[in-house]
Amino acid sequence: MRAVWTGSLSFGLINIPVKMYNGENPQSDLKFNLLDKKTHSKIRYARISRKTGEEVPYEDIVKGYEYQDGDYIILTDEDFKKANRQRQKTVDIKAFVDEEEIDKRYFKKPYYLEPEKGAENAYALLLESLRRAKKMAVAKYVLHNRDHIAAIGPIGRVVTLFELRFLKDVREPTRLNLPDQEAASDEQVKMALALIDQLSKHFIPEDYHDTYEDEMREIIEQKAKGRPVKAKGKEKAPTQTEDIMDMLKASLDKAGSKERTSKKKELAGR
Image 1 (cartoon, rainbow, N blue to C red):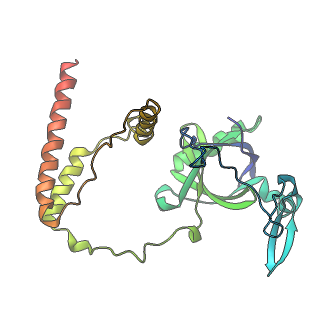
Image 2 (cartoon, helix red, strand yellow):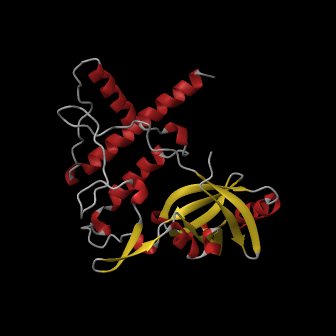
Image 3 (cartoon, rainbow, N blue to C red):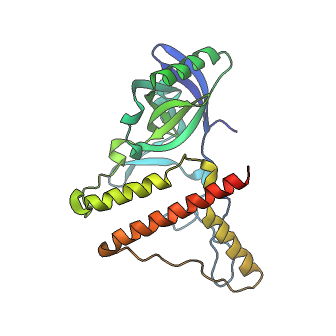
């Protein structure tokens, strides 16, 4: 892996030199090109000047901030570096919080932190301390010329930095038309809880993969062979209020049947 950032992880007066690696794989290797409908030639994106109507070479493009109508301040790479050199090279831990205190909506993207040579002891100290305390560190850092907030915690033997959203980036569900809590009856809730209990199991990431991409590859292969493509599946109809109990009972029966079949297979394999 290639490091996306190098600097220090600041823990009180302790500075731990680290490298930061992206903990996220590319979403899909199924790539699509935009083409001209008539000629099937690729569409190229051009950087066009609004003033001249001509394409501008990449090396002639600069960043500018419009501080008043039509007037811009040009900013160079050196200007961005001068903003705060220390903060650009430091992940600064501000506080420690209980893991469950951070709303799931704030979590955005994972990064792995690796200690530089000579920083192994301080790195291990932070890792083990976070593990035993069952805490996450809340930190701030600068990456790609932008301020970020993060939660830092142990994942196995790795100190992992989770990029968080700022409060201003999270929308509150204030304008949604939501039902009252009493909309579901006690009988319905008890039946739903029984279904949840029957379908509960440990989370195994390997059990889940991108089946939609697999289906798209199949469609591409069929079209490449000149074969007609048939639509798979049907859109499910919404369950009506008067049918909820019947659907819950049927779901329980189906889940129970699957569980019995699974146990029989397990016993037969022994």
